[in-house]
Image (cartoon, rainbow, N blue to C red; front, side, top):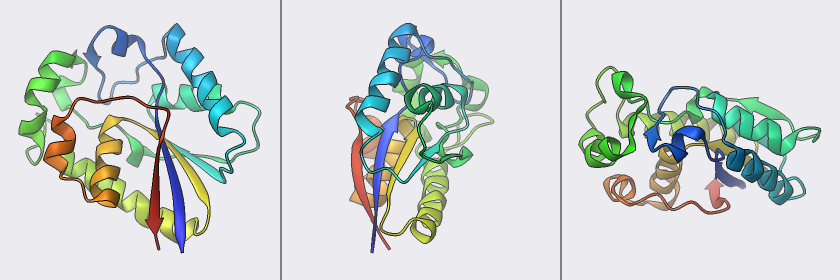
Length: 179
């Protein structure tokens, strides 16, 4: 049996536009982000989605609400879909994040977590999805670290390679979770 996973990142935030690495701070969508959230809804409302799981961080929730307002798709808020916690460095300049990211593959950010921690919580979510949503199409709205974790867990991509590569946005990623 297979769970079809569709992963989308939250829409563009004011922090994205200001080159700030938000981490576990809430963040909020920019005007462009509100438009791209609406486009997400247009893309996915009639895509056979059985349930939507979304990060509990404000920018992801805002994306889901704008995209699926009035839709009959059940929404589950799940903190396991959070971005990596940069600890005391949540809100740091993105340039700093990009130069230091690989050093935190296994070593947590100060008072935060490592990317392996993100993989562990994403893996726990996948275990639950496999038990609850067999033969369903599930939409996840999260953050870049979740996408790297999915690539690592479901495609076998080297985690260091994934986090070292520049993030290239696209309108969703599709995965198969074999149960």
